[in-house]
Amino acid sequence: MDTRKIKRIAAVFVLALFATILILLATIDTGNNNTYDPDINADDNVHIVKSPSENDPVIDPNLNEGSGDDPTDPTTDKETIDKVTVTEEICPESLRAIAEKYNVIGMSAVVIENGQISHVYSYGTRNTETGEPFNSSSVLRTASVSGLISAIGVMKLSDEGIIDIDEPIGNYLGYTVVNPYNNNQITLRQILTHTASISDYGAYDKVTNNELEYQTLKEMLNGTYAESNFFNHSPGYKYAYSNFGGAIISAVASAATQKSFNDYMTEEIFEPLNIDASYLSTGIKARENISNIYRQGKISYSLESMDQFSAKLMTIAPVDNYRYSHANLFINAKDLSRIARMLMNGGEVDRVRILSQEAVDEMLSTEANGSLYKDVGYGLYISKYDDLVEGRTLYGQQGGAYGATTEIFFDLEDKSGIVLLVNGSSNAVLDNGISAMGSAVINELYSSVIGK
Image (cartoon, rainbow, N blue to C red; front, side, top):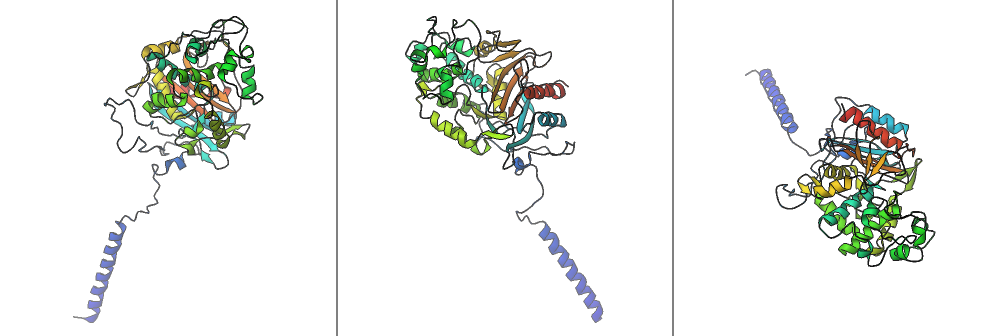
């Protein structure tokens, strides 16, 4: 055979073999595929600053999040449910405009429709120094929203016959508690409706501002400082919002259960709902998600200071602790939304019952009108607003402290609602007592999402 022809055949064979090898190599998975996948490290991609587009990926920062390798079967008798899994969406321009107008640092808004989460929008950062995004997993100290959650714990004790909210609280604390000006006893119902005539402006104010050494609850209510901690009117007579009253809830519950209030709430509320919540910053499992709080753009409450305060709380006997059940709950937006869904669904959520329908009805019944703000009714640590969103009656609670704002509001008629966590923004307040920023967000979402 011609030598040149043999060389040409050999060359073709070599080229064919080389091509085959290349094809085989291309099919091998090296484990180093760098192709973008929105479900990989999705938390790092939640904070997207560009304008929204129909082609943008939907990001799920909690892919495969659950309670372990063996997720709970909702048909079993065990009263616990899977973790709250939500899908983060790109914050629409309308919400971004509100956030920019009110100088929001970080925000997460959960929209509930027909009793289920329908949308989750997040914006900004939970730590301005590191740039970590604020999202629905970001944990925030919720201020007065804590009192609503604490009230749920009290009503569960009422359901179980452990506490009667119409009995004098002294029956549980072991000493008489009366208004020193008229000698009338105080009940939990009065505390929950903020009609207990308990004041924030006496010794309680001095203790919280470190102007007075921490006193026992008995000393505050039935001792040297009692007169300073009450208004000169009868319990049950009129509404006067009281942080001190809300803080007494934990002491009464601890006396009735012989447990710390945080332990009781963890065992009876948080664990069955499978949510990461605690009245101590040190009790949060995903501590890396705890957000700083900002006032006028500067840190006003850091994780370090939160932990220091939590350490102090743990040194106080549970029956004397009047510093956390009213304001110190730490939780994220997705988990707080599960509590909202439970309340709007008569005490049950995702096949787990926390409260009886009767207990929820009692919480929502408006008992104390004439609050600090116009047109606001008050049930058992829960507000009723007819003027927050036009044409709707919303139930819920607002929290605000150190520059942060928390909103949890829902409409029983169509089981819709908004849960909003903001770690810093303008502190402007409307005539009805609601944060101007919070009201703007709630109205925008009811108009553009729920009401469309």
